[in-house]
Length: 356
Image (cartoon, rainbow, N blue to C red; front, side, top):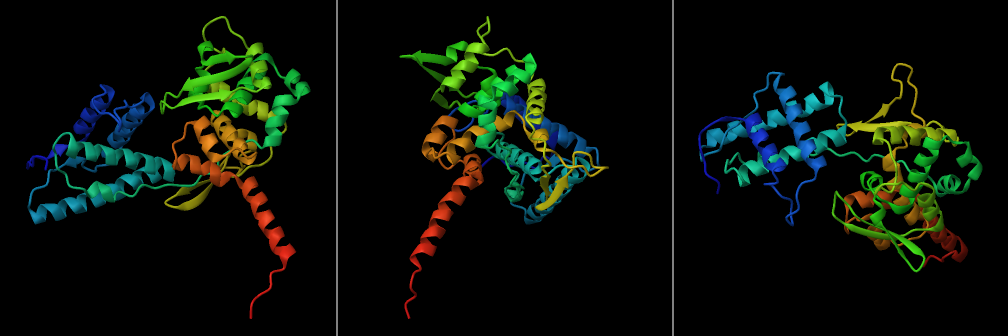
């Protein structure tokens, strides 16, 4: 049991200490892995949110528990009120949606767990009652026919400007190998291995440290050949923001600019997100395509075209039972339709007799 003390302390200085422990790699993940830079920045972002929240007049403090029943009940009420006020602040003042709120609450729970386990400040386990909101956001992917168009339509490729040609090539490769955008854009020539005339892409993910090795089709090696650089990097790329804008422009020029309503959830209730709220203009498909679409398209295409889930997970680096990977399986509607059609056909053909 952690040491108990009656001292009440401000929460934000302790959270700042928590961040320093993260940045100095004094706090490790299970298995001894260090936190990646993205996760560290997420905690810093939460600290800024808590700082803004404190300006609303809510006292952010930590009070260690004792065996006093009155203190226990008081703290129980405090954390219930804190959760309600803070989530209301995120929803109403920050105009956040369920996934964003849930993500920050999950980080907050980790902080309280750290207080108990690493700082010996026993604040109770009220934080375990903080509900982590989640929403099922439809993933944006290209259909196999669309990806096929980008790969093989030479007239379309020739119509693009040099920056858009390069962006399209990288996008197509990303839709093929299922790498995270950060890993794809930082590929080096040393990540390519050629054996008996066959090229392989091998990479260790910065986020999960998962090792991936995938055989490259001929069109992928053609992409590498026509985008050769002088330095060690595989691609000459601009910043990711410019790359994102170029992708959207390419998809628009390909003619996939049809209306594509965007839905998000607040407190479990769906809300329409408009591209222009005043005019109530919906988003178009091309507006929603981004670097994330590459990995999602690659995984969904593999599943749609019959690659076994275990093989797809091996390529994508997802662990068995991964919640994130399940989203792709759930999205695999084409395969679901095909398999249920077979079942329905059998039911119609056999005209099963009902026993009396």
